[in-house]
Length: 342
Ligand SMILES: NC(=O)C1=CN([C@@H]2O[C@H](COP(=O)(O)OP(=O)(O)OC[C@H]3O[C@@H](n4cnc5c(N)ncnc54)[C@H](O)[C@@H]3O)[C@@H](O)[C@H]2O)C=CC1
Ligand SMILES: O=C(CO)COP(=O)(O)O
Image (tube, rainbow, N blue to C red; front, side, top):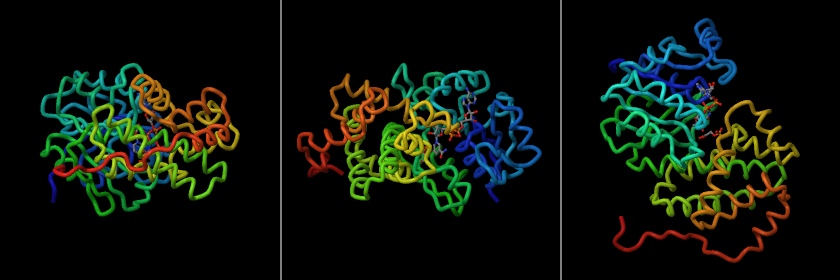
């Protein structure tokens, strides 16, 4: 029997709940911190979090709490599943309860608006630690709840901590691969949300399978091009946290970003689409941030730019699609492995 480890999961939403429950089912003592006392009480009584993960039984080893100190103090691993907008403020609050041997893992797929920082960079900054990892991949929380076979990636420069996370979370339906490329893994997870909105839009407009395939493939080209300009390794985008996550999020109506795009394609405005969702769709903020950054750096991102025109400049999808199709001809694959490269 594996030794029980104290774990903290910060965030009472869908993904925090999925991760917390996997570790709890593996026999670990998991404190899931959330701000709603009502949800804590609900879980204690019913073993369910109906709002975010309806009909998903939560293991007895999962201890819901609104007490940050209780959750974080002496936890070996702290997973942070808080939307990017509030991520820094929550990480700042845990500072008094942390110690040097703890490992912090971000599961949040977003970028900070003011600083263009990724979430693991915020952890490093606020907690002054390099014991940081990123968990990312094609991981729809609601499919994890149904125990669909799923794979994820833990990225960190610390092999031992990667192995620890692999051990804490692996079971017969959840498999965790390791990577050393924190930045590439984390950036892929944030960028793909933009393209999921576009795919949702395309689906709502009844566009064909050729179109959907073109969109996903050109999305990968575009996000890799942007990432390379930021110094990331494009090869990481060929893994689970890149193309894997792009595919699932662009194809599944379970994706909140896809759903926002779908609602807009059906005639809702952005505000209505987001309100109706009632959960976080990180791609909306990421779109603005990436659009500005691409403009600043001079990176060609026609899909980002097209979606920006539709959402914020009142352009029609038809006009944007037309100008995309009539744009200058470009290379298909932009990055090739050169002789001598690994
Ligand atoms: N749901 C999914 O399938 C997956 C989500 N993610 C990522 O995980 C992150 C979290 O997403 P979800 O759990 O799905 O979101 P969610 O929308 O289901 O839940 C967000 C949770 O964060 C809490 N929260 C928001 N602001 C807070 C604050 N200031 N203090 C304390 N709690 C606060 C909310 O109360 C809620 O419990 C996102 O960045 C998302 O991209 C990653 C993989 C899969
Ligand atoms: O990241 C996800 C799946 O890997 C979830 O995507 P959404 O945030 O669009 O639901």
